[in-house]
Amino acid sequence: EFEGAAIPKTKKKFTGKEGESLVLGHAYWIGLGKKEKYTLEKARRAAAKGLAQAKGLQSETLALDGDSLRGPFGVSETISALIEGVRLSNYRFDNYKSKPSPKPVVSSVTIVFKKIREAAASHKALREAEIVCEAVAFTRDLANEPANIMTPPALAQAAKEMAKKSGLVCKVLGRAEMKKLGMGGILGVSQGS
Image 1: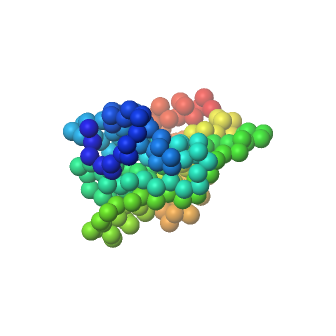
Image 2 (image 1 turned 90 degrees about the vertical axis):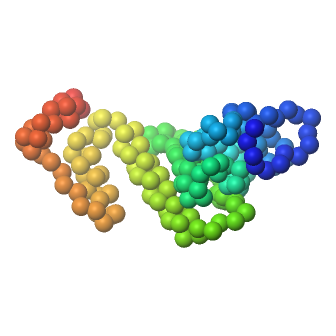
Image 3 (image 1 turned 120 degrees about the vertical axis):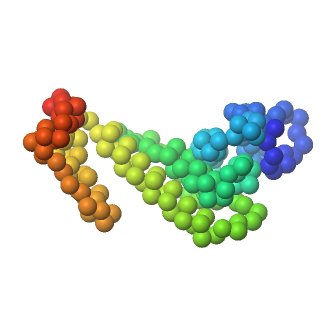
């Protein structure tokens, strides 16, 4: 139902319906559904499924067919979505596991396009997607900490350190300032922790 790379002849049935998948040798085919209903979120999910499959096969590399996963979107948008799908699905929070289970590692992800006319824009999209993913992982790390560890002062300190490291300015509001600004909800949550 979706245009892309040709599937080799096989006795296994693969129609391309959304969520359907097929493994042939070292290739993993993911159904993307109807072309007119394709979204970048589907590209993110396909990239995440591809990463999971590569890990399951204990492969150290993953190559994504950017042309097949592009749909009606630009190369830069597609690159961003695929990087986000891979990086965000790879997130783990093991800080408090006594023996974290060894995780399969995919050390290289390649996105392949036949032609890229917007090389500079593609590199920019890649860098921006990496920044977004790092920010999401940082936020997830903060949210996954127990309340007795990630207290309001600890959260403020983490924000200050991240801002300093990233060249940003961070202003932490005190209780009086927050009360003056009508931030009762945040103060209530803070009081509970």
